[in-house]
Image 1: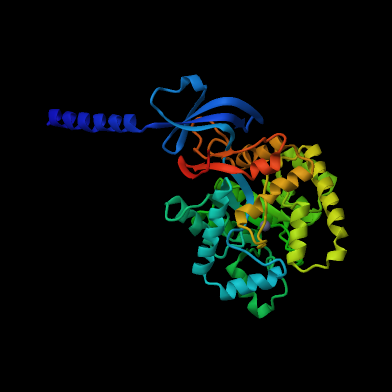
Image 2: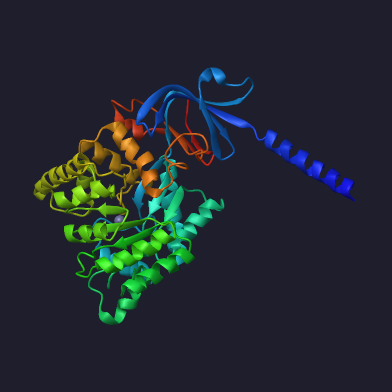
Length: 433
Ligand SMILES: [Zn+2]
């Protein structure tokens, strides 16, 4: 009896070691490799990949004979990019009103149609080398979670999604002008919080639906309602108990201050923050996702929205203010995380449209490598995922892209020229010569 068991054990054990030995390595020869943690470009590095993971980083000379090689010596190799602020289940025309479009979508677009449309938008990120997105709300009742699961199980192709589920907000959410008797429509898009205790319940509901992150609206501008500090505190402590980060949409300085007091991990937008608020963010190392656009994007938008072409001087002023705001946050030491928040149809794919954030950050004075770090390592670190994504190092996921051009001196056309995309060890794009 004992002998036969031992025999069986040996068979199982030896077949398992055989399986491990059979898993072949693939090697990438990178002309330049971006080390996102140290924010430097390294020359001529060899990346070893096994299955979905990166195994080692070495020199070209350590390449074993007869191994499978992807030659990216003519390119710069980067970790898959991360867009930390997306809404793939939402799209409106430039001339459409947000509230009216939301009501239209909630009452006349079925969940099935909404997810199918969203899946196409999600896939377009992958094509642009954005292998992870933080999709934070305006996505119906957990349609973002469904999309994430469909991608993870291989039913459809798309980026890695970190899904928030419905945004936690005070009465009315961000959809303004809805009559009292139709407020139940809002419950299809936002989780309305009525007390600190309810905030706790809302987080638990979200945990039960397997969200990856909690998004709140600290204010609901142009609706006048906002969450109280005690409500946000209750949301944050419950979310942290379940190991989830909390990020807060803030338009006003007061709501950002409230959110920071209550212990959130990040601020989205932060359009009107006072210096004292930024100082506090830097002290607590709370991240900021500045969701702005380049000048050329704003002109495209204005045209699509049928704004009067003779009255566009405000764009320059607006841009100058945005630039100052970003510089002020950077100078004070606030961690900057790159996010697009592009949900308007500007007649290119969503992924392409979202890449405008790179142009904005550059125009606003950030250096190319700092922009890359904000869209890789810092973004991953602030999610608590820096060992898995946003960096090319042993044991991380094999999310690897290559761009053609000079990252340092010709950043925009280089970051737009993605020639190779790998996610989880699988190649999605290979346009190398
Ligand atoms: Zn947004």
